[in-house]
Amino acid sequence: MKRRKFLGLGFTSVAAIATLQTLGSASILSEHPKAFDATTGDAALKDAYGTTNVMKDDKAVLKLPDIAENGAAVPITVSTSLSNAKNMTIIIDENPRPLAVSWDLSEGTIPKFSTRIKMRKTSNVRLIVEDANGKLHEAVKQVKVTVGGCGG
Image 1 (cartoon, rainbow, N blue to C red):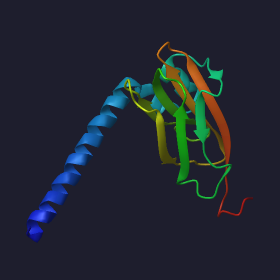
Image 2: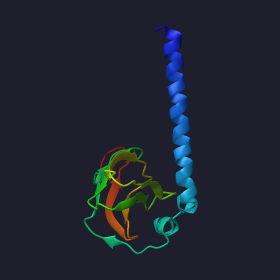
Image 3: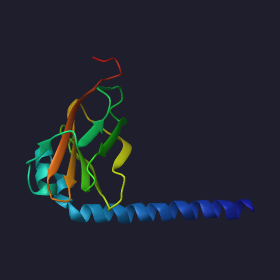
């Protein structure tokens, strides 16, 4: 394969992926536009689900470090033991825009995701899992964001 054709295929692939990501973002934003603009965690929760009533239980599982040395890239893994999970949302209470991400789940999806989130400062991070019956399950963990990784 010649170099130009190879590079052309690479650029075409990147453009296609960017287009698909944009379309996916648009569908998420169209479902909860107010929730992404909310300035408090409870407002984001209310805008996304219509209520702030949640059950704190072990059905929502949130794994992230106790101390984040770099608030720009905090590793997080979320999952649920619910077989009928419909949606999973991460809310970071102290961020200027608390709703970080929301996943709509299809039937048969394995509800486990790992990503990195950006945290402005020490905050509670909440995982909200909505089941097919509309009940909300929550896991909360406080993460301390340090400056310079000194733990102070």
